[in-house]
Length: 318
Image (cartoon, rainbow, N blue to C red):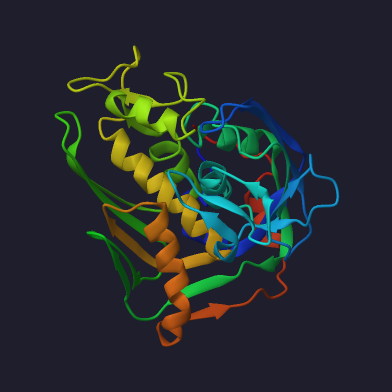
């Protein structure tokens, strides 16, 4: 049976960390190297931190948009003054953490990129459910959108609109007979994210592979971690996981990028032809629209309701 609390947006309003550490290892999408990450519980009000475990003494990297240093086909966070201290392709992991409502996690990275695993957020979500939640006695920070905030770039648009809870609407337009124009919209709660978004894989086109590899990108891409298209059809033997898997993955990417605001968003995100760079631009534009939003900071909270209503390891149908 599905847990009722996981189907409600107020699940995001209380801080949580992992109950137990969690490990993932696999090939990285762009470098092609095998990387390993360890997610560890963290104290309340810390947020999500990346630590390059293979670079002893390097400064932790907050999972905040202010630390994004590259958005070319993936989101990379790091320190501009020390470019070797970075972690690439964080968006699927960040989407899983945001979707599950985990606010405080320290991620130790052995390598310079998060493993791509199956190309979606599903393996991360599954691991999080197995590790379990630890509720923490503070409310989560909330960014409340009061007036529309719009950002345009190169034919793409992203905006944040006032709303009582988080909702995402994403539209794409690709000249391929199996994609074309697609729109997907959803309210966001953990169960909805698990069921309807988390399994959507990154996708790509066979015609682009050689060009990307010459740019030292997509070195680890394969049919095990990419939904691949030739000029007419899907190349993966198992086919698509959703009929509109491509637009759902674009929404997953947007969700992972929005997580870099470091707070729950009380509002609606809308995008057309969005991507990592325009998502970053939207978050950066918040500084220019200070009258259009407000931040509710964490406050002490009694956990009685949450500890009785939600088991630390919820039986989620995924």
